[in-house]
Image 1 (cartoon, rainbow, N blue to C red):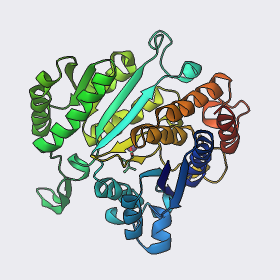
Image 2 (image 1 turned 135 degrees about the vertical axis):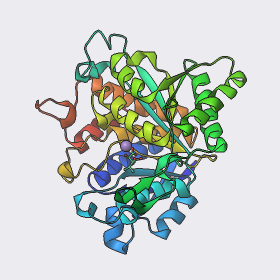
Image 3 (image 1 turned 45 degrees about the horizontal axis):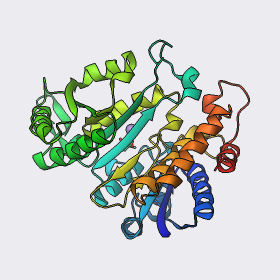
Image 4 (image 1 turned 180 degrees about the vertical axis):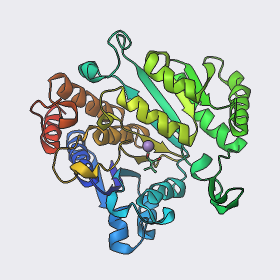
Length: 355
Ligand code: IPM
Ligand code: MN
């Protein structure tokens, strides 16, 4: 088959890690007889520099015309002082909205080879953990009404958390179905002891419960969830939560896997076209040094093969190659604890050799 993939390399380490994933996909193409056509588009700071805006129209059109999108990372100190709607991060929110990607899947699992990198006590992770975070991605406080105004104490700024029934139902449907395909345990995370939006969220989660009798669903308050993730991560199978809670909890979950450089993500809507990106940022401090960990992006490409193209064997081949490379003890600097490590391109070569 022929697949057209839009590449949004972005800023910082973005270009290096996307190049790694492209090389891995090219090897997969050769081995399994697929043709992947890659078309690069500008996004984030590099787009601001070249065109004056973080998300040029051609980028949006290119992504919407593609079969799927692979993204590196956006942002950096150079653009940090720009107003909110001109920041590189705005482009990321813009492309998620333009592609209507309301679901963000963020798997966090402990690789046996990386057990020693997990900052949690050995007895806590003795049995490992394997969590799928289903984060709502196009609603909530990220997209709610916002602004500046004169308030009781003078100048003030506000952002609003707002969720409609439709938005809650569609993300919960994905979460329930995801749980059905896994260990059938779903934990919905909210702040229903304080927020009205969370109370509606919780109500709808339970209204839908009877449609999925094989799934055991429970609620958890977000503050407790932040604690439970480090107290007993194995209790979680599928988590469903709002845009902002999912943002925060997925960073926490990534850290207990050993490195944020390991976590891929898939952003999906109602079509097979998705946007795949590592959950980490652009890491400007290490950009251009060929030392970034490309595994999260390579695993994001594996998620693309599975979720967008339904290429199960090809996707598994990548995941297995990453496993083998880690089992063999190869590490990038983020996981090497000061020991000698492989560069971005070297670890990519190792993964390709194992395909
Ligand atoms: C993420 C990032 C983004 C988010 C930022 C860069 C807008 O932190 O993908 O987790 O908050 O969604
Ligand atoms: Mn984040």
